[in-house]
Length: 159
Image 1 (cartoon, rainbow, N blue to C red):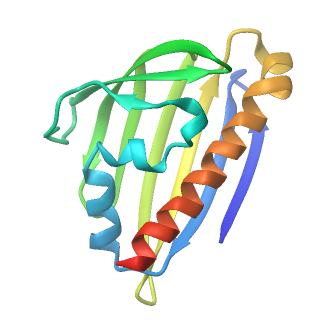
Image 2 (image 1 turned 180 degrees about the vertical axis):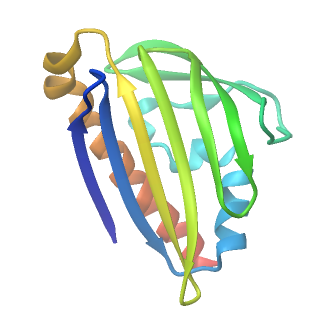
């Protein structure tokens, strides 16, 4: 199950919210996310996403992670900082350098009858504002998060 909502905020940013249920225990699901190299696995292949920071990456508040990807064929470098790290509960990654004017991504995890409910809250702003969001970014983010949810379910439910 995935539910996606995307709408503007009063600050001129946009908000993307997703909910995905994974039929695995919360510690197992959080451990999956604690390995930053898994981002390559759950990111759609058309983005040609690579983690540039050498493994192992010690995840904690303050960790910086560098990536390379392609957005509509254009090469992009991205650096994020883990600003919050609460194992088993939540973490936040924020863009330090990259394609967005703002990128704040909060991941939260809750246990529900032996399954894990994963919530993503992304507050983002793009150059070009609402027009660029409506024409490109919103649709791209929805496809990325749908791919991500399906891939997580496939991988974790095989465990």
